[in-house]
Length: 161
Image (cartoon, rainbow, N blue to C red; front, side):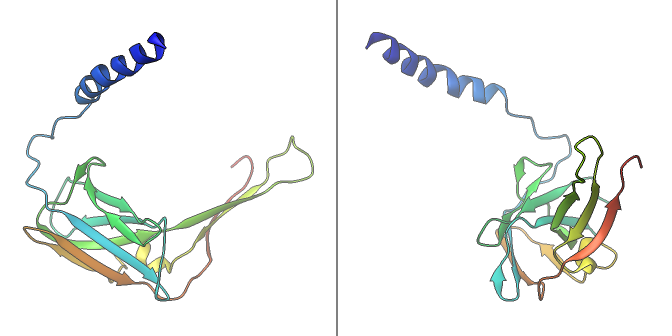
């Protein structure tokens, strides 16, 4: 009974200290960030596992991304760890892909891998995406409806290429 108690005490004392040592410092010049949530629906239903990226319309080095949950909501983070986004105007880029490999009968020969976009490909590039968002001071929330489900072949990877 004494040993498990010692482990619990050790974890309670050490884990907060160790997790605090592992946090990254804010990069120099990172402007104030404002909470941002984007909701993505497809055919009126929330869609999960959509990669969301904000692409600044001005020159910017800050990467703002998120991934939708089962409710279609993505909480955006800058540099993958700092919640929120800097004030500015952005194009919204969305991506959801499915990868399938056709495995041949012989386990020694690689199969052909095909990559499909599960959303309209116009949303996958900042040049063609019609979606936009302006991040203002304070909380920001936007919803985007992206139409009917699709399955568009976007890449084929052959063995040895």
